[in-house]
Image (cartoon, rainbow, N blue to C red; front, side, top):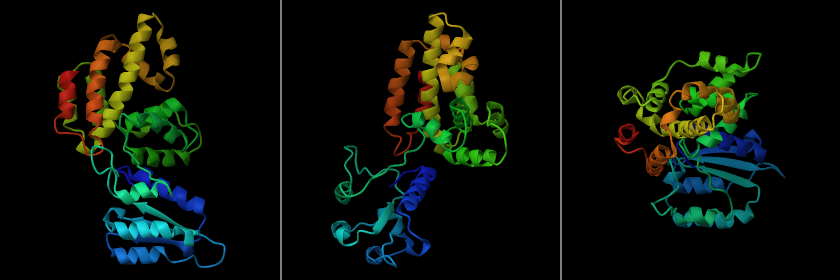
Length: 300
């Protein structure tokens, strides 16, 4: 597995380890950045200690395993080690080698004998799944989970740590509780200014947003654009604010601040913005290009 979202990578590793049910004696960790390839492959061939038990090994820094022949031979030999399980964890953001989505040949071969997982960061493409991820961590309503993601600007580590803190206290996790846990962040100001067509304030707020948060910010823009379009179309149908909030579901808490600006988001403007977001999202695995968010503000 691979991916820049370390929180998700760690969760998947833990999930697989728990499902294998190997004891501490038969659980191993290897860092391929600090070991020779020969050592790695020899260690992976160690059989479990005991009878009818499993052995699981987590190999970090797996991008350093370059020997195709050794990799393929190990996969072919797996039949002789049915109780050995291996989790290869790469620090690369993606397993793709080029724009054609081609991967290193041993990984293609591995797909038929295991699973290849990419833990992608919070972007326009993954934002829709993030709410469910938050809701699985605690008894929390969908709209509250959405609010938390917005306040954290898609920082999954911050969201996870905040949920863990809130679970210690009795009572429901509400919108107000979430708001009290988070200070105003530059991305909040950026989104508010952008959708209000205040380009000057949006540019000023953009300077305060860490570059590492650009992909998350674009994910929030995409999700907010969905809401802007919904509110716009429902206002044309003469729906009341209460009806709109109900139809918006998890995003209902954002409707009050969207009502004054939704008139600007007709289908034509939304389509123009979506085309730009789709182009930028293609680069999300390797980083957002310089000037992309500035161009978004100008296009807006």
